[in-house]
Length: 186
Image 1: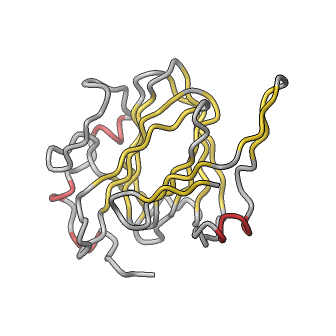
Image 2 (image 1 turned 180 degrees about the vertical axis):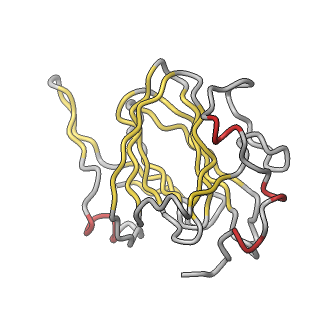
Image 3 (image 1 turned 45 degrees about the vertical axis):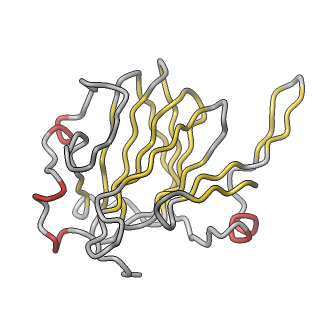
């Protein structure tokens, strides 16, 4: 497996080995031993899948307390995936990393605890897989407004399709610091 580091410590792009021939391909999407060897020593507790159409933007979501790290990938289609550091006291607070994920590049993106996460669908349909380090908790659910000008995310759409909830999220500067994760928390 090829592991690519990013400009923000802990945010990783993973390229699992793929074996293909005329019949198609085979790829191991998770093996604890192999991923630990690659530096990803996480315990995943919940898997999720979403299906979205072109122009849908989901995010930027996070949970606090009870933050979730996420290992994500696309098994059909293509998305622009984004991780935003929202950890109070972090040297990269408010900065983001983007990654193009598709069924063609087979990449995985690891978004650590303490980050807001979102993606925008570029293909007609996208099937998106999430491996989460903690369970979904509706009482801890929160988010940052997708087009917060302070974040400077270059989204591939000007008018995305949003959920009613995502359209009403606050800018990062307007979220009380005690409702955000703290840099260095376990």
